[in-house]
Image (cartoon, rainbow, N blue to C red; front, side, top):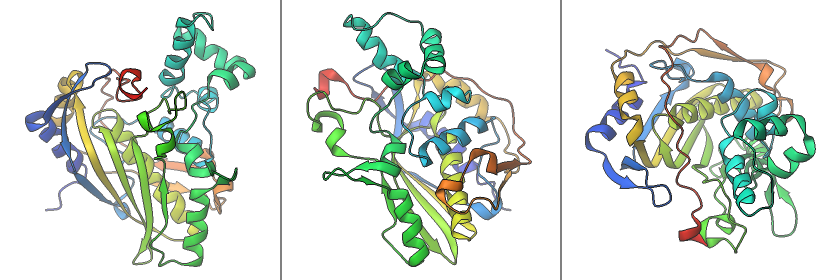
Length: 319
């Protein structure tokens, strides 16, 4: 009997709970239980692997992926479209300026309202430099050029379907941790840091390497996002989507997510949904969220858990 592919995720989460290695984040003191070097594989002919044992925030998946693919790095686009999954990071940076007396104190709600209503404020305080969209579409070259990595991948595979070099990276040591020059370190920890696109048996396949992964909150989003990216690239190339491979460095569960995870583990997976992409999508520049339709998504109820902002730049370690 064919085992539902979602059990790859559920079995990994169960392993972390039962035998994960206990670790403590140096910046926050938050405890996780982790494993290293695990992998999941999804045959996309079976549908979009949007997890069904809890409801995944599809609007967030879709809008965030468009945010990345269009090369954006300011949260204003997401805020304007009602997606708030990135609010915490620029708000944390803003509060550091408040502590230095450089800005007036605002609640998080006031901060986000100003991002939405004040374009100048958003430009000054909504930017997350050296984030995914910037690296994917406008990597800063030393000669001043902006390198469009994802655009190059599409071009290369169009010219040479047998190419082995079509890889996109978001890991730039120049801006990472203590490797960065003083005052230039990226403030968000790049987690899903590299992916490679390959054509096998005429189908578009994508392999993601994720150096750090929050199994309960983050990974369901990452699976949906990169599987959708595979479908979009396939549509642009005029091919079918093949396989999405997800390889982890450190995959972990936060201590305060364990009870919620146990609830999810008690549920049986449902059939994966399908995704339809409009024929209007013929290039990266023609891709828009409204061109994507999620079909027959059934899921169990949402399970809420608190987002932990951990694992990033730590001035005590990285300055």
